[in-house]
Image 1 (tube, rainbow, N blue to C red):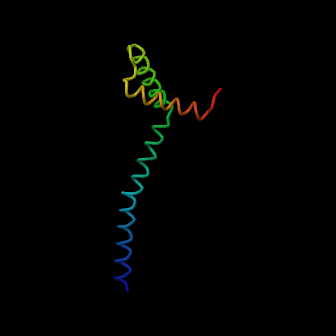
Image 2: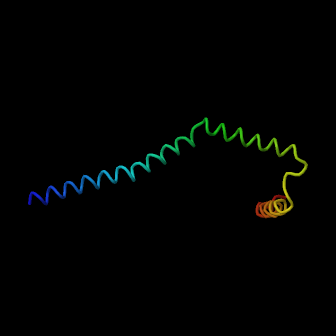
Length: 86
């Protein structure tokens, strides 16, 4: 009976350690990523990059290629039809 309890406790301990080093570590890693992505400094950087990209696009003669223009035009027409703005 002593051997059984000893073996069971050792297996339980190793299982607990395995769980701690795998699952809990992954959860902590994703939690930290979420905190980083939701921070104000990250959002400011994304905003800065977005406006930089928009500014670069404004300097070009054509912003969209013909395929993108057709897709966006169709999409906007469908939205206007659904909204039925008159």
